[in-house]
Image 1 (cartoon, rainbow, N blue to C red):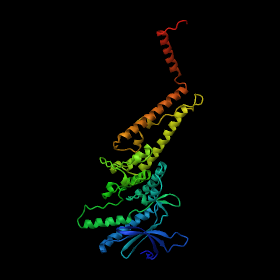
Image 2: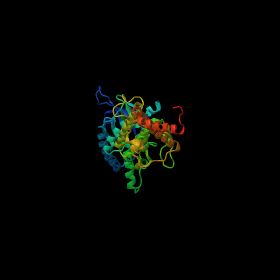
Image 3: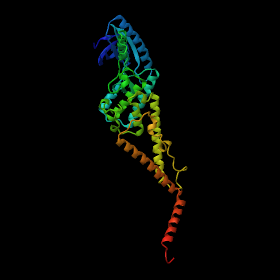
Image 4: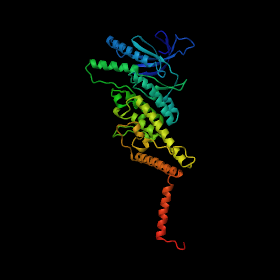
Length: 390
């Protein structure tokens, strides 16, 4: 089939992928001018039946899918939809070719992502998904292989919305329904990245959030999702000990990949807000540490106006970093993680109290109390051990 001309203009040059109901090709658009990039991607769908009624349903589904892809292609980080045609009772979608490397290649060729890189990846893909979900579309196959880092600008591009898979699934579902098998459902996705409700044929917007969270965890741990242990009591992924990240990012990822969809973030905006709050808290923590250090270095003449900066509310009450992610149900942590969390809390409290005391001494706020204590001590000494010869 390579080298043949489809639709009177698209010359097939390479096979990019093969599936159970079609193939994906790299092609050249022979009707484009020489100064344009002629490359494009063509997705083929081979109907499993040549029945006229079956083909009519396929055409209607393709028409609906084409309108969706045209709308989504307006986003700068989603491939443009270029064309759609039917030839010899087979259906073809034509999309923009994105030059770059997939994240699966990056994950295999580089070390673990740093936290800053993971956050940048999260924000980039969440921005795309925000647009996709606003158009009432669930991608259903978020994974490293469908995230391309575009060569010309380094931006992440989201590909493969599974239009062909969706049409195939709907056709099977309708055929089964006509045969009276009304409970038949087909799940679309990839093992390890797709949550349970999606594999059961009931995807939600937060199913994409789950898949993205698992992808970022893979970037931080270099472990494929299927390699991660699972808590058999809760069904939750156990990954925290394989990544060295802040408490805030850990809490956010934990909620993104909750086993039950009701316990996850329900929208991309919720995740973005949590990332922003975690960034603010990290900044405030740094400012507190700097302020405490300054209180131990300057005397009352050089102490900045306003004295020691008060710690933010989350250090004084139960509004901790875990609450940033607004977890509805906290899974019990292993004893070593509880000890680690306790040490962190005690360390922060000790640092804050020490800074306040040292700062107060530098500002001579404690001098009256110290003098009064010294007078009482000296009086006791004279009472019980009189000094002779005075």
